[in-house]
Length: 466
Ligand code: ARG
Image (tube, rainbow, N blue to C red; front, side):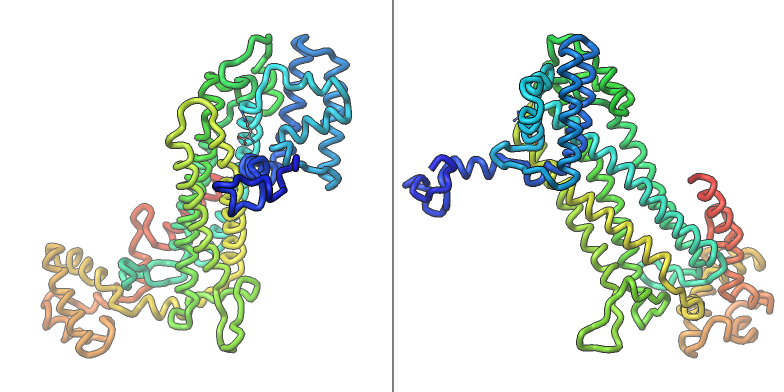
C-alpha cells in the first residue's frame, strides 16, 4: 500500500517484527511533527520576519509578502484554536505550516522559502523557543529567591543547628540557611542571564550552510525578531546547538540545587527532626498509615533532577560525533530540551510553593541547635580570646570538657565552674555567656557569617540586587 501500512510490504528478510513496510518505518523515524509542533508560534514569527525582509529587499513582491503574512496569521489562529490538522507525512512543523500556506494563498507561498533552508529555520525556531524559556526561568528563579528572602527575614534570629557531614557542627540561623539558597539560585539566575546574552544572535539567513546569493538583510530580520545581531558564520549557525546544551547545563545545575533543597525538606519534615511542617498542599497522606504526611512534592523535585541530567547527557552525546554542518541527528535535540524545561519549571514552582507555605518549628530547631555540643567551638574561641591560649591547645581543652559533659550526659553549659576550672584554671564564669546558642550565633559577625545582623545585611544586598 502506498502509505506502507500493509504488512505484506515489510521486508521478507528483516521485516518480520515490523507491522509496516519501509516507507512507514522511514516516516516514523523521520517525522518530528509529534514534538516540534510546539515551535509553531516561533516558526510563524520567523517566517513573517523573513517574508517582510524579502519584500523590503525587493526579492519578493509586496503583494506576495502581504498574502504570505496574512496566510501565516491565519495559520497561527488555526493552530491556537486547535483547528489545524498536523500531518506526519509532512515531517515537521516547517513543512506543515508551508503546506497549509500554499493551500491558503496559492503560489505566493512557494516564494517564502527563498534564501532560507529548514536548517536555518529550525535553528531560528528553536533558539527563539529556548530564549523564551530562559526568560521564563529567570522569572521563576526570581520568585523562588523572593520566597527565600521573605523566610530569611522572618527567621533572621531563629537558631538552628548547622551541619557538616550531617553531624551537628555549630549553631546557625534559619535565615542564614535560607540565604545560602538565595546565593545558589542567584547564581543560577545569573547563568540564565548570561546564556540569554550568549545566544542572542539570529540564525535566519545562514540558509542551508553557506549563506545565500540573494541580497538579504540579516540585520533586519535579527532586529525584527528581537535578537541583538545576526550570527557571524553560516556553517556554525546551522550546526550549533550550544544554546540548547547551555540551557540544559544550567537546568542541570539548578536542578541539583533544587534537589539538595528537596533532600533537606525531606529530612527536616521527618518526625525525628520536626524542623518544618509542610502544608497540606505540598504533601500527601498514606493510604494505610494514618499518622503519615509524606513530602511527595519534594521527593518528586529530587527525582526530576535525574531526568534533567539525562537530557543534558543525551544532547551532549547526540552532538559529540557530528561533523559540520547540519545532520538529522540534531532533530533529536528538541524532546530533551522540552522535557527538561517542563521538569525545571515544575520543580521551581513546587519549591517556591513549599518554601512559602511550610511552617517553621523554631522551638524544635533551637532545642536541636543546643544539642551535640554545638557551642564547643565557642568555648575554644573564648579560651583563645580571654585566656590567651593557642587555638590548638584551646581545642584540646575543649575536647576534655566535651568528654566530661558526655560522660555526665549533660550539655557544656550544665558543667559547673569548678568542673571547668579543673580542666583549665583560667576559665572564669564569663564562659557561660558564650555557651548559649544565641550568644554563639550573635558572635559570628564576620562578613557573610551567621549573626542575625550579618544575615540582615545579606538580605538587604539581595533585595537591592533583584
Ligand atoms: N525537522 C528538522 C529538525 O528538527 C528540520 C531541519 C531539517 N533539515 C533537513 N535538511 N532535513 O532538525
